[in-house]
Length: 182
Image (cartoon, rainbow, N blue to C red):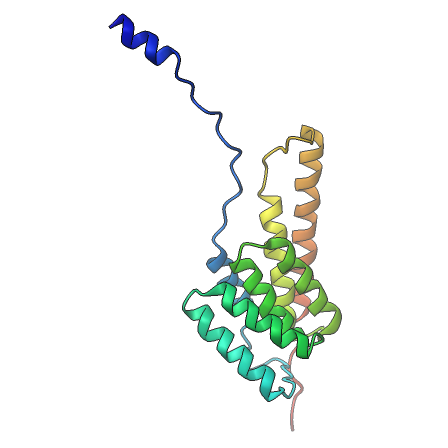
């Protein structure tokens, strides 16, 4: 008994690793795409698509449906080399970045899409919903980093909460009623 106690006394339990904030990437992307669902009574302008880019987008969608996110992202990256100014393509790539758990890239791509895209319609809502979801993740990340004080962590969370409110306002402003036709 004493020998067993001595042996166990030498065992150490490793310190727990800091918990990364978990998120359900598929649920976030579903929320983003739902925000971009067009309604029959709103203005929704769709641009003409390049056939080569459209093929890559369709192939990427097929890979995404099979949860092959890296391959889908690579196809969209190829499409973006053909047209880096396409807001819809940037948005789709932002959503894949989330599925690949790269929140920073998703946010960067959504911001690029906002700068290049329309300020109205379903795609506009998807851009802003992406930023909103990224800000929500940061606002809910209440873990104090090694290099920050409690006051800095509180300020970081408060700034993210302000971003959530701003993104929500911008997302809601994207909905514009369609023109009446007589």
